Image (tube, rainbow, N blue to C red):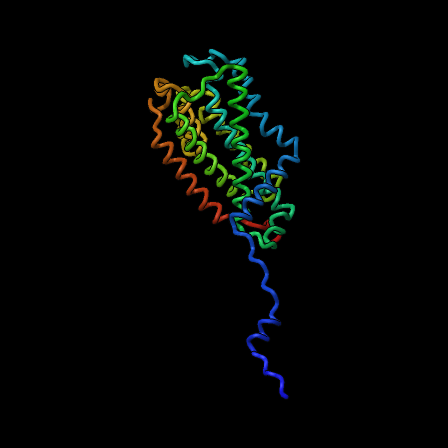
Length: 286
């Protein structure tokens, strides 16, 4: 008696190899990568302490020594707090990413990541998660020290906090993208420090962080106005300061529409520059 013929489709299904599970989404991989970035940063405790402590120490220094130095009608801690928050945000985004990515590129970290299933978008999401972690931590420490040690005045209403929030978001994203783009300019990790730190230091002294903008020469102010730090500081002052303090700005008003326009433009420019210049390998690697 003949055996029943096998169905070819059933036989093919039975012998087919089991399908591999789908890869996690780009967002999920990016969030996981962000957690890796945060843990790696925290392990370098010297860098972590310096990153969080430097703006706080500067605020303490100015609050104790330069009180009533300028005729602003405010205590030194109240006056300098928004500007130093802006400086800290640029530090953890522009400076941190610019130097960090240049180091990863030189020592082959980016080249190894490029050879894994990790999508480039997931890598950038991971960096964004780390920057937001550092930025939020920086702001929390500055606000905590300023209020607990000196009784600093915080934004008094929801509208002021909303202003602080969108300036925080646009400024941090724009500076992070700019830092990522600038990381490709340096030939080595050591050169990245000069390429990044020198202009950052210059901007601190020309963007109203340490010296009120109404005391700056016009040509210095106009040069600083091309970069995001001056507008970040002005937008944060609009959130922290009473309305009458707008008279001390260069135009006599907060100009929040210009703050949003310039910071938004830097987000777009930073993204274009990052896409155009970002490299996974050093120039010597081809």
